[in-house]
Length: 260
Image 1: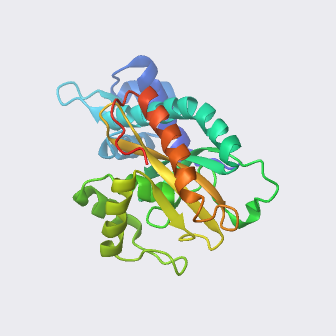
Image 2: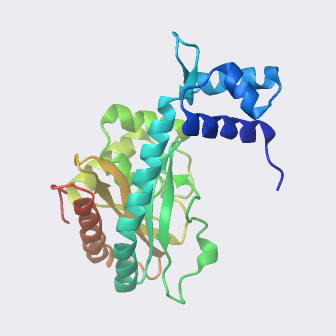
């Protein structure tokens, strides 16, 4: 695999600062033996992105605040995956659906864990989502289950990143339509995608909350429309909500809202 040299060099700088603490430009230069102009540009870029910080008094460089944010985010995702996986496995076995655990990233919903349905009737080739593969927030149950619990300004800013692209005849493509759907989601405690992203896929999702009762992820069940019928949605929703509530509880949330 071809590596991007500038990124490799930037990582080495960050590793050096992590192991040795605050260092001057000259100290970094001596240890990494990089060309002066290269080191200057990389440090400048890392500083502008808040990945390193430069002390105004000493001129030395140290790790930046964005790395703290990244570390916290990565740790949270690892923790929730560990907590959620047993519930996802049981839920998948109980309702015979593929189960996704997802968060919002860069204006899309991103599955960070998945437990696949064991059903031989589940045509995987129809569904292209999976761990690390983003999907549209407004056209998926997983995305709508998170968006619905954002405040209005945060929701609009998040949706604006990717817009409201139409994928099927059922896709919601207006803010008015989304707001109406979100009111129903908040009341019911779960979201449904009626083939809004893929024609033959239906999804049911419930929000997952942190210790402050803030929705930061969702748990969704996915199935083909011929099997996950509208008549089954309410019963499946009860089970998805129950699993999401248990995950939320183990994450420190004492109030999970609607149960149905």
